[in-house]
Image 1 (cartoon, rainbow over the protein chains, first blue to last red):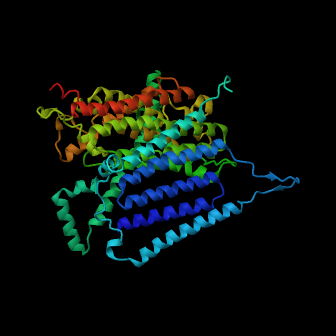
Image 2 (cartoon, rainbow over the protein chains, first blue to last red):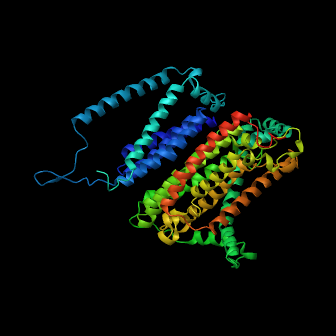
Length: 183
Length: 384
């Protein structure tokens, strides 16, 4: 009962945050709504019994990704959106070209099909085993995740760590101060 | 679920009897109601108590700094000026709440709330005694670092939303500092997690209760603490402490609010209760990081010689020991602030990335190697 209430609250957080991200015109406001949405996702994980994943969601997204996004927005600065055409008229740029509309349309169609299928399955199969089972879903997940990471999924683990190392080296190279002697 | 303050009560038969009788006479199951009531009460006690600690922290800071500078400090309100922080609080309530015209109003209002939520969220896992932690999550340490990173977002947004140069610089500094120092802090906490074999505060503090099995009288004495477990953890403790100072924006790392260059940094434009939220969050966060250091490295709530046993007296003594150690650390934090000069921004980043992070990485590997070589035994266990 209590778990269900928490689940619904988290779901509302997630969906409202996501909608506000899409609707909001100020990009910093959008990242704050994204923060709310991500906290909601952490709540969803928690109510479904994945405590470690929930806390990882908090650490990675709230502590890392959102702060880095804010930094990136601040340091790149707002672009001057007024574009002057070659005839001397100032015009507001459009939201995209034919290419972006086609890609966006296809992506949203795909997402709609997947979500529709999920909702359809959830509505059709309302047997007891498919409902949220929160009473016995709480168990220790940390040690299981740890064991699986270094045994069964060690390849994925290593590949992602190489990816992160590459990102780190790349960031260091980009951020390196250019000396006068270079070039 | 995990150990909570509720599960502590459920181990007593009289509580179970009482609940059963209440359910019978009232005609419905009162256990959920009891659980919610106990949780609410515990949260009320912890938040009320720690808000008081935050207020008293401001007074302690002023009194201790006055002591170090051969002054009297506040001594007008109440005996020895003890009620000064209440007077300050009333003043904050009565002040006008100014919002700058050009500020981003939404973010301006959200920022102090994020700070206070980030700090209050950590209370859920602070282990006061083995019965009284609101909940002993099995990912407690991890949760604490996760939820307290909201403070960084709050500091950053406070700086951005005020639309003032000083605030913006303070906010940028604050966020970059918090993000950077999270790494050595987390790594040195991780080495303790490695030694204890668990992420919950209960496991970590339990592992520090008694190392020498043949000398059972030595329960809770300093040699059981993780800081003296092996040479790496001593270094780890100091890295943790330095990093925690930086994460709580305390001198010598108080660059986000460096008053001699940035007026008062990210909360320059704030006034009234919103300013008080920032200040309160800062002082409570010091308590939280000191409490974390005590739980991870300094034995937590283990009472020496197990005085008081497991009953109510024991619980109170445990809470007393924990809070006492934390206040001792709190004193050190204030002492450091009034003794050391502030670092420059580049020195701050150099210290974190070129010194603390490599040392803490080395420490983590060192702890792992020690665990492997000596089968998890502490320095002391090797000799006795």
